[in-house]
Each structure stands twice: as C-alpha cells, then as structure tokens.
Picture 1 (cartoon, one colour):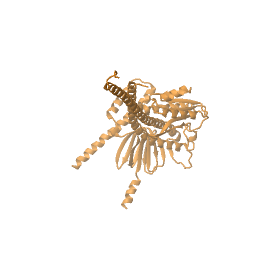
Picture 2 (cartoon, rainbow over the protein chains, first blue to last red):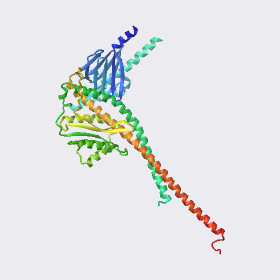
Picture 3 (cartoon, rainbow over the protein chains, first blue to last red):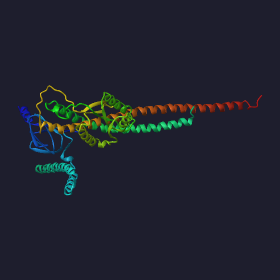
Picture 4 (tube, chains in turn orange, purple):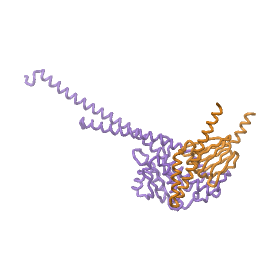
Amino acid sequence: MAEQLTNAVNDKKITLNITTPRGLKFVEKADMVIMRCIDGDLGVLSGHAPVSAILGDGILRIINNGVVKKLALFGGIAEIGKKTVNIFSTIAQRPEEIDLERAETDRKELEALFKEKIEERRIQTSLILLRRTLVRIEVSMDLEEVEYFEEESEKREF
Amino acid sequence: MSSMRDIKQRIENVRSVEQIIKAMDMVASTKLVKIRAQLEGVRPIYRELKRVAEEVGSQEGAKFHPFYKEREVKNSLYIVLTSDRGLAGSYNANITAKALEHMNQGKNEKIVAVGSKGYEYFKRKGKNIVQTIIDLPDAQVYYGTESLAKWLVDYYMTGEADEVFIAYTHFMSVLNYVPVVVRLLPVIIKETDKENEIKYEPNQDTFIDHMIPLYLHMKLFRAFSESHTSEQAARMVNMDAAGKNASEIIEKLTHLYNRKRQTAITQELSEIVGSVNILNKGGLHDN
C-alpha cells in the first residue's frame, strides 16, 4: 500500500534531462518546470501533451517539493513528453557556475554602450548580450538566497 | 664502407629524431585524452538532435521547408576536414581520397577546405576551393563551427549550393577510424510509419528555422571533434611505430659499430702479436 502511494507521488513527477555539448548535464525529478520559449514562458506539469518548443534566452525554473531552482538557459530546444522533458541547449548554467563579478562588469559596459550612439546592428547583438547578462545576474542571486535560508535553518536547529 | 666515426654520427642523428618522435607521441596522447572527452560530450546532444530533425522531417508539410526540400542539383558543396600538420600516417590521404571518390560521381563541386593538408591537396588537383579554414586553435573549434554553420545556412539559402556534404574521419577506437562522407543539407528524411502527434511551438516552420541551425552547428562540431580525435589517435599510433623503428635502427647501428670496433681491436692485437713473435725470434735480421 505504502509502495503504491509513493508510486502515485512519483507518477506526478516529471524527469528533466538537460543535454549540452559537454554531455548530459542535468537530470532531475520535478513537479513543474517553467521555461522561457521564444514567444513567452511555458510551464510543464506531468502528463503534458507531446510538444517540441524553441527556447529563448531566459531562466529555467525547476519546482520540486516547493523549492524553486533556477538555471540560466540560452537557446536550444525542448522536447516535452508525458513524463519527461528533454532540453538540448548550448549553454545551461547553474547559479554556482556563474561569475557574478564578470556579469556585473559586462552589464555596466553594455549599459554604457547604449548611452553612446551605436549602429543598429550592434544594438541588436548588444541587447541579446545584455539580456543574457541580466539572466545570469538574476540566476546567481538565487544562489545567495539559498545559502541564506540554509544558514537560517541551521540556526533553528541549535 | 662507412667509418666508425660515420656510424657514431648516424647513431646520434637517429637518437635525436627518436627524442622528437617520443615528444610528439606524448603530445598526441595528452591531446587525445582531452579531445576524446570533448567528443564523448558532444555525441549525445548530436544524436538526440539528429533524431528530432528526422522526426520533424517525417511530418507532413516539413517536406516543403527549404531545409528539407530536395532541389535540382547544380552545385555541390564539400566540407573536407583534414589536419594542419603532418606526421599522422595515412590519415589525410584516406580522407582526401574518400572525398575525391565521392566528387567523381559527376558532381560539380565547390570545396571548403579545413586544414592546410586538404587545402594543398585540392589546390594541386585544381579544384574549386571557395573557402579555407586553416590553423583553427582547439579552443576556437566550438565558435568556429558556429560561424561556419551560419555561413553554411546563408550559402545554401542563397542557392550557391544545392547540396552540402561533409567529409570527416569517424572515430571508432584508437586503432580504428573510418573516413566518411555524409550529406548535411538538405536534411535527410527518415520515413517512418509511426503516427507522429507531436505539436511544435510556436509553429512547425519556426521550429525548423531555429532547430536546423543548432543541429548543423552540433553536427559540424561533432564532425570536427571526430576528426581531431582520429588525427591525434593516428599520430599517436604512427609515432609509436616510428619510435619502435628508430630504436631498431639504433640497435642495428650499435651492433655494426661494435663489430667495427672489435675488428679494429683484433687487427691491432694481431699486429702486436705478430710483431712480438718476430721480435722473439730475434728480430728481422735472423738467419
């Protein structure tokens, strides 16, 4: 009976696989996955109809047992099945992999660039770069929050 | 007959060549480990994207998309992956021969030569080389293939080429690598009877527009990785064989040198013994 129950709980979960050119990078069970597609966010729960989608530059949110994990994901495609979500992307970064200092300096440089007069084409590429930097900054902020909560919980235990 | 000094000189020469060979062997084996890890990393995403590309292609309506539609072939583009440096045995010869054999099936070919060996070879043959990529550093391969994929899409879409092939060396194991020629564009459609009910976001055409460049990028990156891995493996194996040959030559020459030395000593000894004998008999003025 207990086994059946846990099975029932597991049935509601979806398996997320992220494959990058460095191999299968990320495998995780999740209640819900929210990804940024080129025309808006797409949330996926278990039992979703099979869909393949193009991803844009944005944050991938993985919600499992009430905990939200964030990943920076730039481009690629997502293949959604009933129980699985396969993401193929060239760049997928965890919060701890992001160099926040570098992202901040990149943002300052890019924002300074927009104050000057630049050509139309460079605006386009710079906008994409700025968007990526902002995503990186937001994702890496997430890491600090998580650490903060961990400290809190430790304190409560003592 | 060469003198003892000549033999000694030769031994020295072979020994210094052997040192170089050993160094190259070491370099190739370290590079092999690194590039092999890269290859193992890219293979899964390539395989999955290939499956997705084939799945989309089998859908009704995708057959008319420019990336999938077969056109009348006037020009064929060949991307031939060779190495920049030699001393890799028959590695370059195998891949250029394979590419040439494919071109000789009555194709009007244009060539993208990657690696100076391939460039020199096709230039000598008087082929139409439209672009060359030489001395691409290992760290730049990823971005290099990305821009090559973009260029390729433009080139194909403007009608400069009606089909695109890539010739690379598929890495099976350290001792086994096969040169292959495969078609990149139009993307090969695999007919399946399976009912495909996948929906595409935002729509099928946009999906193909975005997916195929990524697929091409990964396919090129993987082909580059396969070729580089094969190159380093070939170099390692060949340098190993060359190192053995050098040791053999050194051994033979040392034998020869020792024999000569022994002959010289024997000769000297017999001269001394001969003279002593004569002196013992009372010198040259007896009788």
